[in-house]
Length: 178
Image 1 (cartoon, rainbow, N blue to C red):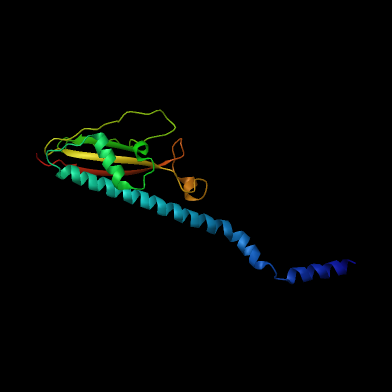
Image 2: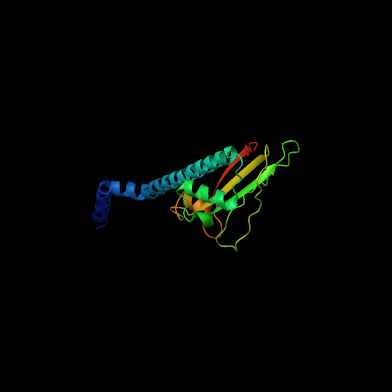
């Protein structure tokens, strides 16, 4: 009786039926997670490239627009129009513009000023229009929802209380003489 069961067990162990299923079961989740993380990285790259482009084009317009000093809301609208990929841009984009003194360098705040949908609305931290030949620094912070917030890279992004992550674009320029 024992020999009969041992021979069946030996026959079962020699079979290779279902070996592909075992490989699939082992490798499916890591490969799927890698694929979804790749999609997440691609979306982050697209969002960041569009934000950078919009900020650069807007800064160029500000720098060369002699006699025209656009205010915060107008600059924000222009960036939102040019960025394209920012959902609910008027609520998710925050601008900060400061005048810097190159002769008495104090630097800027290290952490960007970003929105957080889970907190109460905060006023603009700093927004100063420059005069002729002033060194200006513009920083835009836009918040985005991850494509796959619970998988791979989307799970490991640094997010705020509303589950959004920040992309920051900054640019420095010298205000042209008027």
